Image 1 (cartoon, one colour):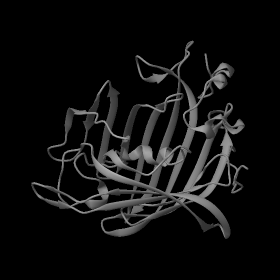
Image 2 (cartoon, helix red, strand yellow; image 1 turned 90 degrees about the horizontal axis):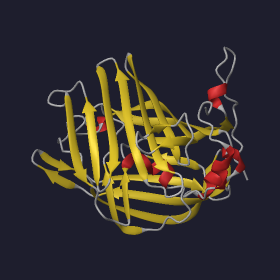
Image 3 (cartoon, rainbow, N blue to C red; image 1 turned 135 degrees about the horizontal axis):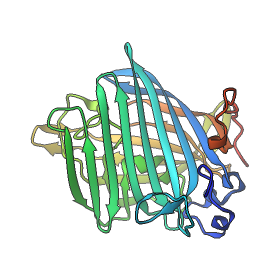
Length: 300
């Protein structure tokens, strides 16, 4: 049996789609990166914390779950945990996204969100050339459902929620052929939480544009060479109105071989910036006094 998330040693002979996943920091440990800043809810900026936990995991293809028996297949898992407060009540939202270690192919993604108004669950599974959506929500006309979508052919066919890991890929290039599925991390099925009151729309792949440039930014008071990835979702019309253009900008550090994401300027108008990064076997750190180290030093 494999303890926690740690894969056996033979995994490290595999070639990873993301080069930085082959670095020594990921041998038996997870990358835990904490981002602080703001997001927009109900038209107001809210202080928010996002934690990205990226780890390698032995995986079962048929069940699409962590393996507790022998397997020769491994997945990259990224848990994305968002916490923020709106007025008197808190939000706690979490994605889990899985990719094949060697090919980078999406395997599945699922999301839960809890706040005082209710709970929502969504799961996406890639099955051949289709994407299967299962959901249960507390919103009217979104109580429970199952839908499928064709998986379109494009240079990059992505879930929005894949972007925080995807932008760290060194082979990334600007492309006019992008198909993007809307964000999972939302209590609503047919619109993201940040635009409550805007037009409802069915979740489906839509065209987007991806641009890649390089520059230098100030991060924690120091200059850093970065890859800037801009993802633009053009405006589109629905039966109930027009959804405006949305843009996300990601700043990926180029001085570190780990290619950490330093800053994310979100399409809701908020910004999240890296405030702590560490590599740990967190599944073993479950004692009453265990705490994450406060570390801002980026690996070389």
